[in-house]
Amino acid sequence: AYGPTFAKPTYLERHLATDELFVLLVGEATLFVGEEMKSVKLEQGRLYNVRRATWHQIAVTPGTKVLVVENAGDVKTEKRPLTNELQ
Image 1 (cartoon, rainbow, N blue to C red):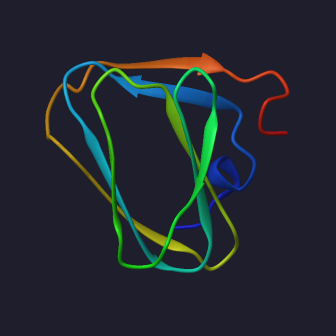
Image 2: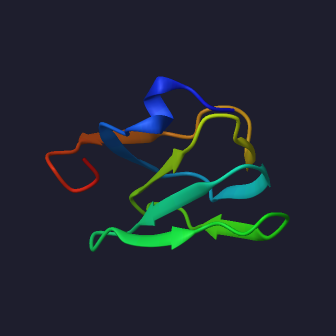
Image 3: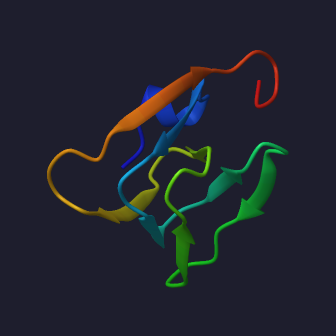
């Protein structure tokens, strides 16, 4: 769901032990993926898989709902602050 963290992301993350799956349910969202920060505008109902150990972040508009699926337990997440890439 929408929140300040996802309106204007301040960090990238990657999960070393699991892929992460995103499905846009309602609203607008953009997924930023990889070292090159490739932007992908999500389409409603489509599955987007971010492979294990890939830097990523999602940005959403107010009212947006996104289903996020990943393995439970210790996903070994690393975070890296953003400078101006998405701001």
